[in-house]
Length: 254
Ligand code: PGA
Image 1 (cartoon, rainbow, N blue to C red):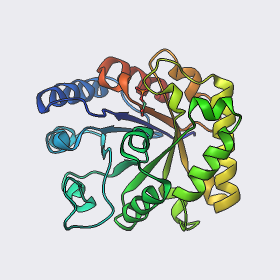
Image 2: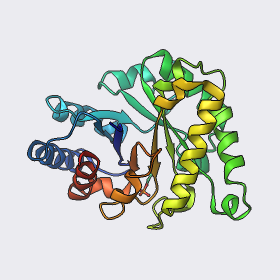
Image 3: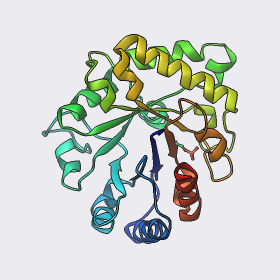
Image 4: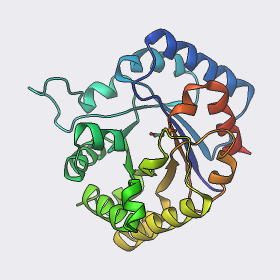
């Protein structure tokens, strides 16, 4: 059976009060709507809400992730959050290399690679985000961009460890825009990513979960999740609306 990971990336949204309300609605919804074993549900709130969300999900099947981390374990790195700090809240996943971090905070593939190594060393699952800009796509360089992001971000990752990484394909032009990639574009990109991973890391890469992200909602999720190499979704805007998020989980479960 196809494996799915449905993840909510709350980005810089929610106060503790709002995160508590949203989490309670998600848990109540999941109580009423069983999730099959092949579907993992993950929420990635801002750092400041990890503690309260962790307490609320303790008895549920919902998993917790963070939106970023630093690769050093401690020290004089003002404003950064270490992996040990995240582990206090039972974070099991960390989003790395989101295009917003690449764009606004100038994160490079080399920097992202260090975080991936640090996360694997600590037995946390990195969700590596990759994706092309509209200019890249219009210049027919989508695959060049994806292969450069993959090869540099995954430098020196072993064939054993590759299956411990989730990859999220998020075309930048589809993030937060309401414009989703067409099914043909999703299929082509996911097939390319799968083939790249198998070519570079061997058959173990067949196990890598590849999420699609970019304006996923309850209306388009069915078609997207049905695509062969799509193993879930990384959802921004729609994950802040419990009924949308629950519907997408339901679609993965069906
Ligand atoms: P979106 O964001 O669903 O709001 O497009 C997706 C993401 O950035 O992960």
